[in-house]
Length: 67
Image 1 (cartoon, rainbow, N blue to C red):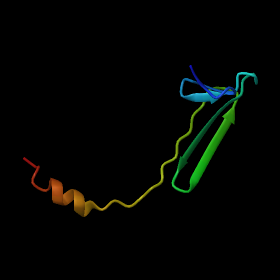
Image 2 (cartoon, rainbow, N blue to C red; image 1 turned 30 degrees about the horizontal axis):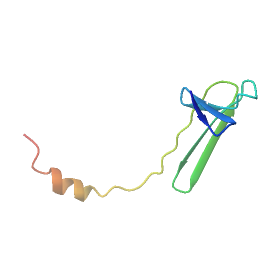
Image 3 (cartoon, helix red, strand yellow; image 1 turned 90 degrees about the vertical axis):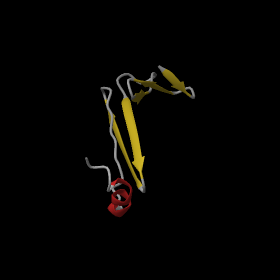
């Protein structure tokens, strides 16, 4: 268990308030987006910003790797 400041604790990849019984939360952010969850059991959430990949770069570096 890791203690962050004095009111929020972390256990099993989720955060909780020890003074509030059965209150867990989790927050994730990516790019301009933020999402959060709150519940009575340990929980988690994750978001990822989707970006276009330039596959020409990959082709340049990996074109000669087959067999």
